[in-house]
Length: 366
Ligand code: DAH
Image (tube, rainbow, N blue to C red; front, side, top):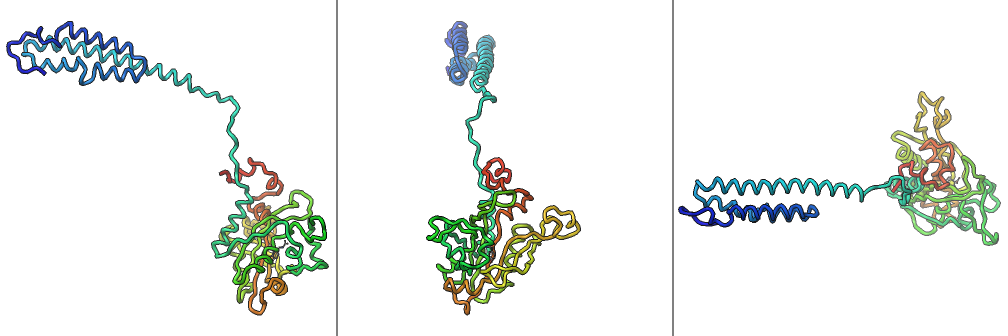
């Protein structure tokens, strides 16, 4: 900035000369008109209207003029700056509108085009149900045990007190692999995992085993040649039927809702003595006033759930456990069945048909 100047001639303050100011203004307007896009305009704004632009610098010189000369110079510079700012704003508006138009044209989405996105998979409802059940038992200190689906006949039957001529063998229509002399079956139940566990571990044993089982059943709304069971086995000192009842009541209330209990009906399984069929309290009517009309339990108040009992000492002996020291309980439930009545399904077939749309209806998309 020039210093105080009492006897100055405004015409001599070069940046404030009319033709200088005019040239600055022309230069600015030309640059603005030439800015091809918003980024270029930003630079033009800095160069011609910024703090260090010629017009801004000229403006600062005004203060150095004596009062009588300031007005005219001030007007000249002020008008030029006003014109530049106006031109900037107008160009900005034009470029923004152009930019928007271009975006709209370039980013058009044709919603009628076929999608290339694949449908997301979903975890199978039965996998989730099995994991939920396993988790309930893990929370009680159990371990999850596993066994093969192609199983030795001896483990599937004999070790469980189902000798070759045992009439109960016919209760489970069996798939045999060839050649028959190999005595290999597709396991008909998850109970062979009991035998496997006792043969490989020493008590105390607390295991749960969800898995696939196979029987030569016709495929219809309530039968499938492949289905799922969950087996439980406890072997420890002093285990009784009372422990079994308490465990299954807890299991039922966790799976079907608070306060849902079980009842035992006397039954027969070769691997348990005594044995019982377990029913679970109907979680819809709870055996209360609405029981007569209840479609879930068909007016029974109870739903058949599985089998259970105190492990037969013959099974303990076959699996190398001393029945004088240890006793145990075991149970087996159908997972598909549990899923069906938990979700009020009449037909189990969709469970095995692999339709992702059906599976995801159970909120299992991942
Ligand atoms: N394995 C039996 C079945 O498939 C179910 C069962 C009953 C399992 C009693 C058990 C049990 O462990 O103790 O019909």
